[in-house]
Image (cartoon, rainbow, N blue to C red; front, top):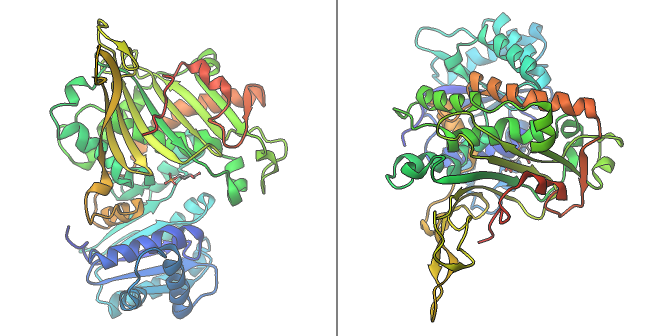
Length: 485
Ligand code: BG6
């Protein structure tokens, strides 16, 4: 892959957690791989009073910490941090943007940078509108003739359909849609992208990828950890907004979309959007039947969580897609905190044979599965029935496994590495488009509204380390759920 074109990368919220944990380590990895532009700098904007030197030292220390298991070349790290700069201002105070403009101008001259700038909003979401307004009022959203402007916006993108629409409308007054990058880090995961390659570069899966051959699809994202120190944010969000509306629905878009006619950002995102617009809207009765919400015991005593909270830390739902390909095929989405282990995967359950000839473990439905394991232990596993050795014809389930570890010397990049270099190169294929996001809010909003009316009624408790509340069984998910291979 070639380097991105020369540009400046401006991070709002540069002294924050996301910058430390994700953005800087990923930018450093891109530097090691020789993918950052030749003429390039990262300008951090934040309230914390750093200067360039202390900002560099601070980020270097965090990069060493986060990438502790990798060998860090001191020289490479020094070269990388020399590209870091910092300006300490309140990013919501438009009066101070003169200082920011001057810092940008100076860096562009000193580092021979063209007028190409990416703004990354790594701040709390309530600042998105005021920062982008300041960018507009100061004229920073306009570029010279050889330049461009792009903006990357972190999740959550709104907290409801109305707020997402408002934020979209606001950003569209300042930037073109093609320059707005709504990041969803799940789409940057290698195994998620491989769903597209698996489906559309092989002749053997796609003919079966429909209601005639697929019985159901499961999308799991279980986490062993609880809410930790994020109780304040999480308590106003819950699993539905935190994981389903964005990550898991985008993932579902990849699993369920029609074959795109070309591999470009708009064509792919058209197909994702079509899936999300085809979700069968629930009636309130269906919400009660098809959506199970749970909360782990002990959640209400977590830091910054309301002691009477009815926020769900677990959700299992059965979703139907109203189109020709998927009519009648349930998609089960299951996600939760404080579950037995971290595992994210897609399980495609194929229909059983029309007539059963054999007896045994793999004689009925759920015998043929395709597992796309997103993390950990990234792999693709095909399960099918084979005769047990010896007398008789007893059939048992066996697995054929492709393991990413078997690709010697190949390191799976962090999702942010992929997404950052894509935005720097102007490729928005793996970024969420406004219509898709709005479609998923349109689906999710009535569920949140219904729960609000019911308060805690219908919220089931589960013990930490359990697979969620037992009420999940009412959904009729295939018993073997996540297969342990
Ligand atoms: C984030 C959610 O977007 O994704 C977190 O806010 C969640 O609650 C995280 O833990 C999961 O991401 P990953 O990459 O660790 O599976």
